[in-house]
Image (cartoon, rainbow, N blue to C red):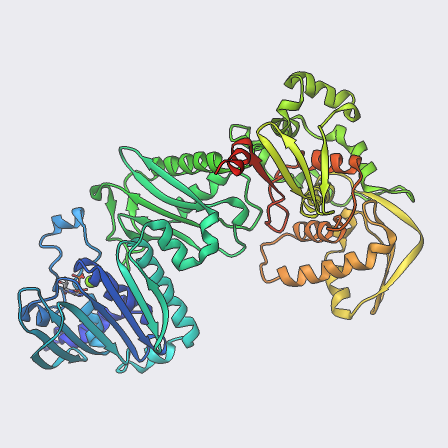
Length: 600
Ligand code: ADP
Ligand code: MG
């Protein structure tokens, strides 16, 4: 048999390699931006047309390339960044594979203009499908401009595979943000189809984050700063009350390189230790510097995953540092970060026998505030302690107070409260004053009560004298039927399901008969909104929905007794600081802050 093995021609090899490096326009953006940074640029412009499908151009003021380098840079394995395999263990640049430009030039029309400081004239090269079309001298500023046109023009399958402009633009913006966040000292400009999308001045990190994510971000940031022998970490996390339903602004940079790490992400989330609502995510911008020798960036072709020598130590440091910073910056005096974290786990669903029928109790004179009174003795000691911190100055001594709480709750003196504009309740605390949003606070209280009722305790139900028949659409009935047993756990008793109506014979004690249809409607709406997120529990949605519907509203007058009850019950909650919707339930003003209002 004759010899059949041949070496692939370069342009074919480059096209194959390109498949690995360039998946979409955003990959080109990443490579070009990184090259500009490696070239020492302080000013980088990114110009796009049609989500990068027609044009991706990066213009930098970096060191530029000589005539020979300008030609060589498109060769495979042409790199100025490493010379030996040993250099791989001491990388200080983003690139090192010498593959990006060769790959890009294999699958697009590329035009390069570049000039070094020393040269009078620069170079202008056109290259298509790995073939140099022209190379001329040209007048051009110091630095480099690379225009990549008609990406995948010679690989139709790839081109057709690209997503809509909106999706590809999103990917590009993600890459752009990562690079811009990694280098706040560099100014960036991003234009898309002639419109300015970002104009970022050289700035400090906080300002860079704010100019990318908007002015609202500023108040959300908690600074992080820690130096140890194996790791230095600076950056920001967002306060827990600003956590998001969608995992969004989460950035880890290691030695200025954006990376993804589920493990380190876990360390950050763990630092929030029970503060996050189920299914919500904090934002973070964390910059880790580790010795270059302790990481291996080479395990992933697009280099967003890296391997650490000492992952476990990093985990511990990250978690502890963030936890500490959150503790320091949290305005809430009720938080105690040394408490037993077992107590922070959500209500234990498993403790409740789901099938058990709710107890029926008729209570026509139901009043939510009276009920709170009776309930108090059940509140675990631990929470009373948290609550107590806030009122420490008003009470004779901690232990005395605790005993009193359990012996005769109603005797407790919380100090004066005031209702303001039928919206807020003001009360004094050890360190100053606390201003409580009555409706949001009540939502938090009811939410925790419902959640507990649904998941842990046996729900109290009141039997209706006359069962109530409510009409629904068939889709709604279907929906209610699927969560029937959850609703029963919450205290509903159903009599009959037909095609267009449901008959209800019993309801949770915390609801009045006139509120039934309102509660059900709101619940259906909330379930519809949440359903795309399948990980969400019905219990949680139900508890939130009920709390929203039933909480006292702004505009409701509260007696002094009711105000006190509200304050007490709020600070008996597991997470008093935020309403179920994530908004703050109260703000504190310290004496110091009050004083500063009067000194100018
Ligand atoms: P790598 O970045 O891995 O070295 P690339 O294919 O991205 O490989 O680039 C090849 C070489 O071209 C780089 O090592 C660098 O010397 C040069 N180069 C690329 N882009 C620029 C730029 N914007 N300014 C100056 N030199 C550049
Ligand atoms: Mg590169």
